Length: 329
Image (tube, rainbow, N blue to C red; front, side, top):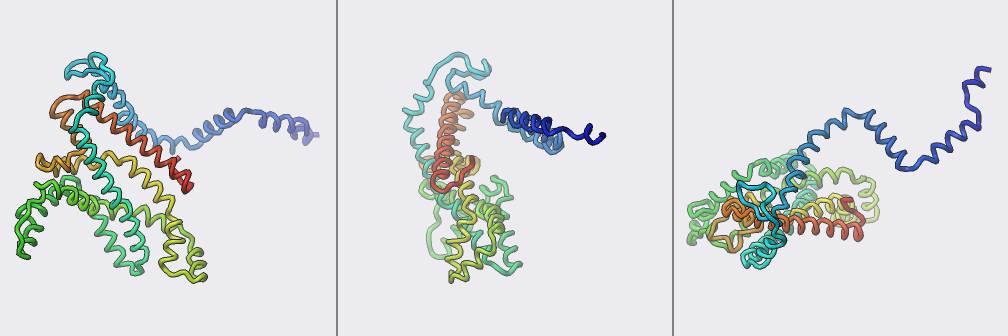
């Protein structure tokens, strides 16, 4: 008698299961989300500060982009005095100086991507082949160290190395050559910038690739050896496909920052003599906004740069998803 009272009848169980199946998917997702929030609220609370950071310093400042379409005067209305439409966009599109710095941005961004993206992969593959733990740790430590130096220190080191009395010119004198003012000649700036960027970032970029290499199944290498594949074929057919998702993800992220070429380092290294090859969109924007106090014009340039970056990310993500089946979303 007690068991009959406590246990539901088959009809009741059928109605309950049918009712749960008849709930709309949105309601079921809402219930599961609230249940997960109640269960793991301590973990979710850890995301509050990062979300507040992005809200305050990333999303709220987007409201200031409205001054790209309004006339802004320092000390006046924070959102501009009156509407001017696309006037500032027309100004920089018709400005020959803007197209010069835009070309410099494309050239420096392309060179940085060509050298700074594949070299960490190569270094990670080489470190993966090193079997002596002590040598591997030493190379990793030496290659990681430049990442922890501030941009100011790196720029100071570059200026000391390539100054007229610097180390490089001392070597030039030692072999019987004449000293060269590298930092005052436009044709040398791109080589100096890209080489310093490679030295500073390549070692740190290997960390994600080394972590991805550890996830590759050793049985794949064993099967490749049984099939007669050497180290090069194992790398080509096993290692590179194994880290391809990481490679594609980092490539898309690098393309997203294509237009934002190292602003801080360029600002510290360039001078009026090297403007023809060193001046990029971000430094031109800085001069227009803070040195010339033309904030609306600078906001229009910055919005234009951001839109190009967004288009590049969306395009790279779409192409990657359709060609290799890997994407950010």
